Amino acid sequence: MIKVMSFNIRYGLAADGINHWQHRKALVADRIYAFAPDLLGLQECLDNEQAEFIRNTLSDYSFYGVHREGVGESALEMAPLLWETSAFQLLEQEHFWLSQTPDIAGSKGWDGDFPRTCTWVKLLHRASNKTLVYLNTHFDYQPIAMLESAKQLQQWIQQTVQDCPLIVTGDFNSEKNSSMFQILTENGLLFDAHQHSANKGTFHEFGKLRKPETLDWVLHSKHFTALDCNIDQYHEGALYPSDHYPITTVLDWKD
Image 1 (cartoon, one colour):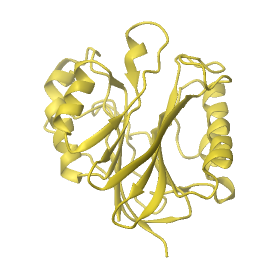
Image 2: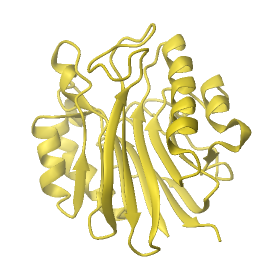
Image 3: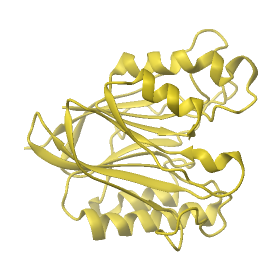
């Protein structure tokens, strides 16, 4: 079995009052260790004190993240992925930008407001002696950029991953009734790990949204089946780990 978590931890410099990063960072770590994922995809992680805290606190994990670049303080933002070091052997790690020039660092695609990246690793799962690819991303919220990013990711999967087992996590800034979701899940390319779970959303804006939006997804190839899935809605009064709930999934290899 492989335990997977996707978690937008909200960038640490945001002026969030009681929910500022300094107040909630211990709660972020607590929720991660409460599930104890084998694979963890983060979004909105700044490569400053925020990433340093993650690396130091999650010392059992290997960390791979790339600055999305661009201009301003958000250039240090990453969508890093982590894997439990004792559970996997790293075989390859790479990244690309969601744009018309994916190999150019900091390139911004289409009508997007920010550069966006995909980070991925090829790992040997020690328990099963099987190889998989794990990819984590954070899509832009502008409509053309979202649609074209989905097409680009679909093409990358078809050309690069081929028949290798694949797990994808991310904040896609879109609901599951969107064209982006359809593109990524059509023709059996990827499957929604939470397709049979209760329709709970993930983005809640620190408890302000009556009905949270389902923006964070865990997707997987045909090589896996989802045994369990959940949205972790834990908070302590008005203090939340983030403005997104973490999404968790337990996957198993198919025979």
